[in-house]
Length: 339
Image (cartoon, rainbow, N blue to C red; front, side, top):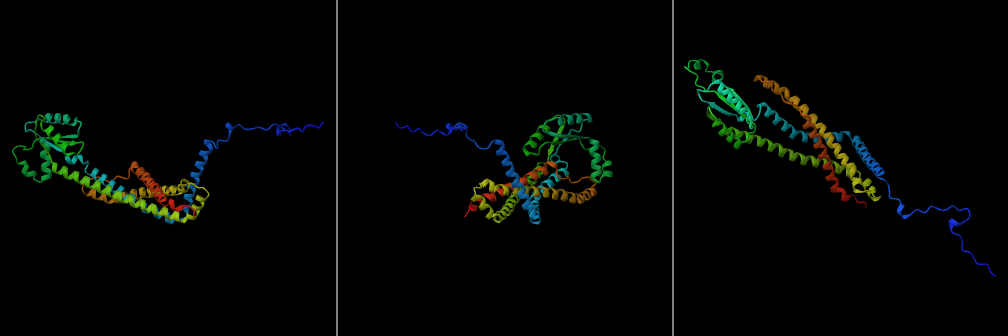
């Protein structure tokens, strides 16, 4: 009888063979965890930032003048805005220029005038109320008119007591309504408001604000062009490198990232320089302003750059640099495909 041929043993059944561990399909490799991905992402950003700093450091003169051009464009509208704020402070306030003069009746007493002043000062749309007595009004007229000796010959004081009302807001319709309401109060003979001056003042303010806004828009567009052209030159200098990166599978975001950091760094430098230019310029101009104000017996001086305005300027410069770099890279990204 012939022996039956036995089938060869399975690998796990061979003598001395240890059973192999077979992974189930449910326990397969899911890829790197979140911590690994986050670390890789942070490392990529750090490398892009260091690379951008290194490339800017290789061209210190060109980088400085690019930031300086951007700083000058940023400082012009901010400087005009700060000067308008100082001019507004020079007059005390724009609201004070639109004061309402309430002329009391001739028989009104000092106590009546002060009581009326306190009542008006408590109104919600009134910033300040000041009482000027008849004697005080006559003394001011004698001092300002230069007719002091002639006014002394008058048999009696012809001037009434006055309550000067300073509104909180300069608005023609609101001022007229306030004047009408004040004129109906007891003891008031006449309520006078120079609406023509208010309209002129409002027109001047709107003109200044519109001019600053238009100048800011034009200079922002110029800044975007400057940063866009600068980033475009950096792109052209690294065209071969970028094509190789895209050839081996580099994504658009990976290619774009160093240039975005470069634009943000240009904006940071420009914002700091603009802040410095404004601070130095206002301090330099303040010497002449103090001398001029001293000739008029005033202690007025220009205020410096407020911290909030300086930080806003710096943040705006960084955003402009970032946006300009983004637009420049987005425009040329389609041309960077490997050839």
